[in-house]
Each structure stands twice: as structure tokens, then as C-alpha cells.
Length: 235
Ligand SMILES: NC(=O)c1ccc[n+]([C@@H]2O[C@H](COP(=O)([O-])OP(=O)(O)OC[C@H]3O[C@@H](n4cnc5c(N)ncnc54)[C@H](OP(=O)(O)O)[C@@H]3O)[C@@H](O)[C@H]2O)c1
Image (cartoon, rainbow, N blue to C red; front, side):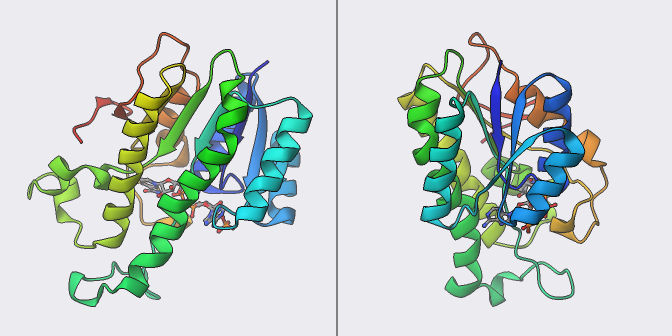
């Protein structure tokens, strides 16, 4: 039996990934910073739930202790993330970006991913087929965002792409350090969720596709890569 934790799984892409992995036979923990939202999603999907705020050390440590006591972990999906839009759903312009607008994105997307990974590495190391999926973004790609006519080239903001590029670096370095694990970054594509004020063009079913696929990699699968639903992406 494969046991999987998905952070930020009470809604959006995380919830859809949880739904699909339950369907595929995984024992899934819905990670949610709000206990009630997590409980409700877990009940609806036939999953378990655990409170986890990726910015809070104690909550992450407690979640790891709970899952360890229940029997351990095989698959970690670092999905919790924020984009940090303005109040009217706009993207912060480079001239308005400050350390204060950047910091929360790094706290959640980068430090959160590292904090959760660090806490769960000992559990994953005891799995026969450990897998980590880091939900990055196409905007993490330096090659794509620097290409004016690529879709990512139009994105003006600094904080979100910078945080997701840092997530990709975590993927590469963890993958080298833990060759026993399959550790990859994924780009779900522009998906209609609360993250972007539901302005995305894909459904969560379409967006979760690559997350679900990479969460189910066997020991022969790729590691240290960056993938969208249609294949490998440039860093
Ligand atoms: N949607 C897209 O177009 C798109 C494209 C590329 C990548 N992504 C990435 O996909 C991932 C999922 O995003 P989404 O589009 O599904 O957005 P979403 O619907 O807003 O879901 C984000 C999830 O992350 C959780 N979260 C935020 N901060 C957290 C924290 N400190 N601790 C724990 N959970 C936290 C949210 O919990 P609450 O409900 O408590 O806020 C929510 O469950 C993110 O990493 C995002 O960057 C999305």
C-alpha cells in the first residue's frame, strides 16, 4: 500500500490530485492548514487528513510524527503554494515589488517546501519506492520566462517566478543527494483555481494530470527533472 501526503490539498490542484490518487489506491493524507477544511475534503474523498501549515515548524513536525506513527510515508507532494496577487487579482509589477511583497512567497513556496521535505525525508528514506513531487510552475523556467513569445514570457512579476525557480533548485539538489528517491518538479499549466482568481484556462482535472503521473513513478522513473503534461521542460 502506498501512502501519500499532499500539502494544500483542501482545494484546487492538491484536492484533485488527492481525489485521483485515492482512486488509484493510495492511502492519501490531505494536508490542510485549516483542520475543518481538511477534515471535510478527506471525508468527501475517502482520504485521511492532517493539519499542516508549511510556514509553521511545529505544525510540520507534528504532522510528520502523526504520519510516522501511522506507518510512514512513500510519496510527498509539495503542492501548497501562493502567488501573492494584488487585492484586485493583479500581478505585482516589478517597480512595486519589495522585500515585503517577496517574503511571503518565499516563506510558503520555498521555505515551506524545504521545511516539509526536511521533516519527511527520514520517513521517505524508509520507503521501498520513495517519491517527491514539487509543484513548481512553467514560470519557474528561466529559459521560458526569458523568451518573449513563450506564454511564460508575458508574466511581469518577480516574486512568484523567483520562488518557483528556487523550488526547482531544491528538486535538482535533493535528487542528486537522494538517488534512492524519484524527485521531480512539475508544471501543471495555467489552471482555474483560487490562486489566480479562477482566471486559469485549464480545469483542475487537466492541471492535476502531471502531478498525479509523477506521484506514481516507480523506481525506474526519471528523477531530478522538470515536467509538464506534454513532457520535459527546460530549466
Ligand atoms: N493554478 C495554476 O495555474 C498553477 C500553475 C502553476 C503552478 N501552480 C501551483 O500549484 C499549487 C497549487 O495551487 P492551486 O492553483 O491549486 O491554488 P489554490 O486553489 O489556491 O490552492 C492552494 C493550496 O495551498 C494551500 N496553502 C497556502 N498556503 C499554505 C500554507 N502556509 N500551509 C499549508 N497550505 C497552504 C491553500 O490552503 P488554504 O485553503 O488554507 O488557503 C490551498 O489548499 C501551488 O504550488 C501553485 O503555485 C498553480
